[in-house]
Length: 196
Image (spheres, rainbow, N blue to C red):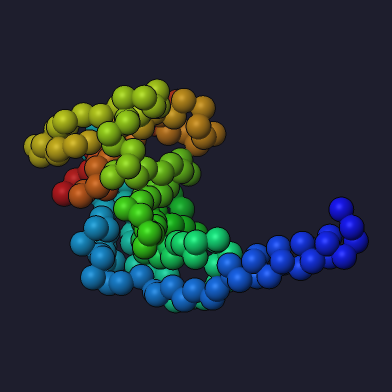
């Protein structure tokens, strides 16, 4: 290829590449979407074990993502805006604030990830896109219903800690509407149930 054609080709490619860049502004989390979030207000969540001991999670703040702007470099100008809401908590064993639950969603798909933190065991789940394929994931089990105490909850997911984490949590039961329903300590088998 002649040097002048090479320079022209490189110039054309740079023009095309730069033409694909546009600035995109993404909104803050819309409080109208809080109906999808399990813990929308400051609250105390209580769990109890077989010895009637209590484990408390104190949600002190519900934090919304802020608006932001970024450079979209997609050839078709399809770049996702992600926004999120977080429940910031402390608990009866940990005074340092942490994110107990974060929900993140996109404006270009129906993706809606829920990120949980149960006593240091971190996991995520997308109820919309992953639930239909749950039978393909060895660490997840679907329960059409689960009774915890005197209450029966529907569409419950059980996640097993198959060396996914070093946290001392063996299993967690949760659903979208009610959040964490039960967790079981790995080393002792001790079960902690949600008290409504």
